[in-house]
Length: 168
Image 1 (tube, rainbow, N blue to C red):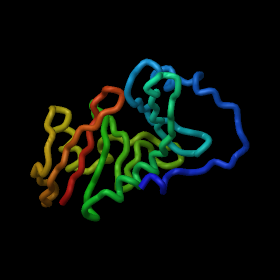
Image 2: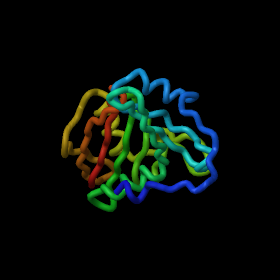
Image 3: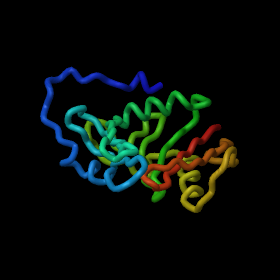
Image 4: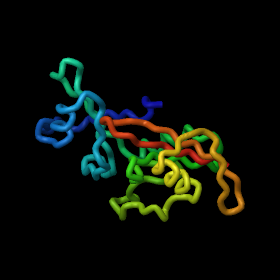
């Protein structure tokens, strides 16, 4: 539920001009939603992505910063079983966010996650997705356990991304 992740900022106003940012210039040139690469946001002491969209008339831009830890928490609430895995990837296979403690960067600005940090079912789904496979309930076995893989598209800024859910 988005109401749980919306935060109010009671800090005194600080000068902020969105026109000075790359994401603003990008969104002014497209008709859909854009998403930035994950970046460390000093204000929140956390990794975040920015989602932005230009209004129909083109004179207003709506943008929000989403902390990857909040995105992970939201994804975890959608898992059908306690042992399920859910990860969002860019089409090139770069992880965006995931449930079960997986964020793109380790806490306190540590190293970026590598593919070896992800579960075998998630990696199998990633490989399938990168070759164009999409579907619900694709059987997969790993480490003596049977899994069902769910691979779905979701789009931002005209780019295709995908979500993988592995359910034991």
